[in-house]
Amino acid sequence: MQVEEKQQSIILQSASRFPPPQGVRFSYGTAGFRSDASILSATVFRVGILAALRSLKTHSVIGLMITASHNQVSDNGIKIADPHGGMMTQDWEPFADAIVNTGNPEDLLQFAKKENISFGGAQPAEILLGRDTRPSGEALLEAAKQGINAVIGAVAIDMGILTTPQLHWMVRCRNKGLEALECDYFAQLSSSFGCLMDLVPRDIITDTVDEKLIVDGANGVGGEKLEELKKQLKGLVIQVRNSGKEGEGILNEGVGADYVQKEKVVPCGFGPNDVGIRCASLDGDADRLVYFRVLSTSSNSIDLVDGDKILSLFALFIKEQLSILNKNEKEEANNNNPVRLGIVQTAYANGASTDYLRQLGLEVVFTPTGVKYLHEKAAEYDVGIYFEANGHGTVLFSEQLLCWLEARKNELASASAGCECQKAALRLLAVSRLINQAVGDALSGLLLVEAILQHMGWSIEKWTELYKDLPSKQLKVKVMDRTAVITTNAETVVVEPSGLQEVINTETAKYPKGRCFIRPSGTEDVIRVYAEASTQEAADNLAQSVAGHLRKKKQMKQYQYQWTKKASNQAEQKHHSSTMIHYSSPHLHHHNLGGPETDDRCHRISVVHRWREQAP
Ligand SMILES: CC(=O)N[C@H]1[C@@H](OP(=O)(O)O)O[C@H](CO)[C@@H](O)[C@@H]1O
Ligand SMILES: [Mg+2]
Image 1 (tube, rainbow, N blue to C red):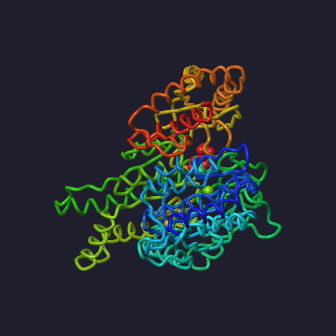
Image 2 (image 1 turned 180 degrees about the vertical axis):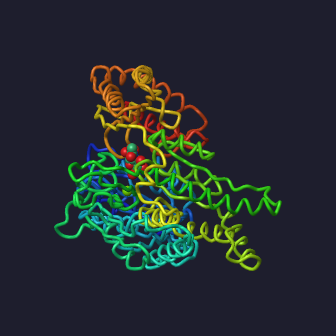
Image 3 (image 1 turned 90 degrees about the horizontal axis):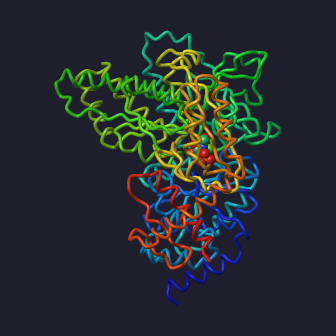
């Protein structure tokens, strides 16, 4: 039997054990596929096959993470990590959607053919699997393994319970030929943290910085990993709460970074005894981090230090170190190639943070929501710092800059060891090893925050004073079909349904310093409304009034009608354009992804899909 025929029969046989649920449509959203865990096994099985194809295509190790991050415990999800450790290329997302939804496993083989993927070659496909602590994780991991094993020559390696960033880090390391076990991850983080702590300037009065940090682990995987990591850290006393141990509480329920950032209240397990102490919250899979301070013994309000302020702290420190190096270069009249430092935010970034960063003279750019967009943009700089307001972000260093820093460090070691310039090079190199280069990572982010606060001699209070957040409000609105909303300009402007942006503009104009935008969530079945204004009351009112317009069902139906007509025309035009990729199944027509307008890209896909579904 030919290898293709054999492959087809294995896939058909194993797929029959995983029939897709009826009447549900999945979409590879902001962070992979997510839904109630009870209906996910067929999706996970198919994504297992897809990951094996991705490994064959790229001749590299691929990652598969089973997690639903900050979602409720009954949910779960799956996402693919590409060879460099980042999210799966957006080019494959339409196919991921199609294969999970059509229920026809033969399409996988058609796709493999089109992508020139051959089976049974000399190099096996290798997929690293990880999962968070959700009870549904074990069975779903088994489904993923069966998907991988259905591809001839594919090997699944179960790395056990991990944080999402650990799995991404391992994939990246494996593909660079580096040690990639969990103990290597902990060793790299603790040694680079130690290096930064050794370089804290001696003249800094550190008694303002409390050694003690209390961390809310969201009752997820991050708490237990931090317990392991902290054994290897010097100069920092960490107390972990909500670590997910028996009896401590339920994953993400009243705890964790998402809850603390959105509700702006003290998480469970924290209270009056913690007033003034530096506290941090991780999310369920430990890729988000926020800090907070309990304000008083009598209320549950907090002073929140969100992703924007973490970003600002990192930007300040890195800018300072780069300018020490730059100054030295200038003195040597050698500075014809300044380092490009870029900051990447989304529309959810508090306006005060953007103003602050721009006042520092930094270049700030915006992308749509979702780390895949931010990461891609940040990688264009020598040093790219990206953060979502919710605490997901990291600092990326270009290979070129790292080589240059390495060379500077060595030169200076022989010429002027111990000078400020050499220390700056050493610090930046330590940051590049500490902070996860694959994806946002709460554990490595936390250690970088701690090292920088020590370096500056800052308390959390001093840190919060960098700038004052503009009052803001976020709301979720359930509508009949959230895909009816199409946005542009990094999601700040609604293009469909027509007329809606004008309504938002009119409302916004009523409030001093008002800013408001809406977008469909990629992880929940809601439209998100964000508003900012000069007072909390004004921000609340602005958000409520725009949400009110969305809730007016009649109006939404009318929008829907207009939109459907228009979308059909657009899709019709696209169908005839030369940029379509043609797959064999009638369900598999996709707009060719590409071009610089990321925002446009992500939302047109849903237009085409919807039209296809409605077509007779
Ligand atoms: C407002 C908000 O926090 N949105 C989050 C949330 O996406 P939505 O598409 O908004 O549901 O989850 C994403 C994945 O974790 C994260 O990247 C994003 O920032
Ligand atoms: Mg997460």
